[in-house]
Length: 233
Image 1 (cartoon, rainbow, N blue to C red):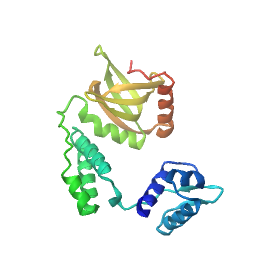
Image 2: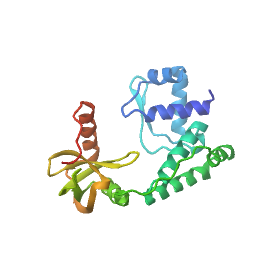
Image 3: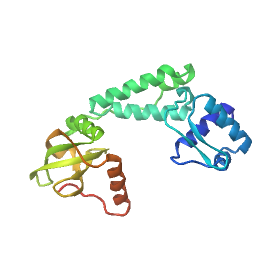
Image 4: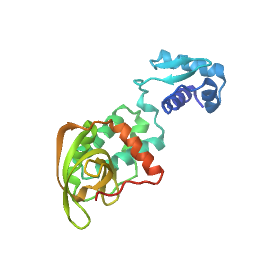
């Protein structure tokens, strides 16, 4: 393994951890000596990486350090292309445009050989025709980012409408449907709402009183222990 690749791997390992990691653990994962690890950490610090810690305590990477994007492997390039093309093929036009722009920015900073890999990738995604509920996706994504409540009119499987105020926390993209995970003020619990059954929606100026990340963790925990939020009823 080249030293450049080793430094990249060290950064990636540190990025996976939110608490300090022991030097011995890092050295073992990289299959290097502690002395070499300490030298590599000092090299990264000299290049601008905000690595806090010391021998015997552990190390943590603070946010803000960006590696040159030319360090992608060919498999990583294909993964980016496939993901970007999948998003670009969806009917959510603003998100599709963002995916195409992102791929263009990545291509602009890659070395020639990897740039050709990106441009000539044989991984293709079939376009999907718009479906009911797709037009609302940009508004729902905006509400999630801003942690704002949504007022919706929703129809159940029997087409009975109801008015709800929900706190959207996640948007799931499935093969045929899109699903919003949210806290429902009416049911005082987490519910799933299919976007094709949302008859109307309006983003409000009112932010929900809890942080989305906290709610997302709670929702995922409930799912792991077998108490899955049901579709709205």
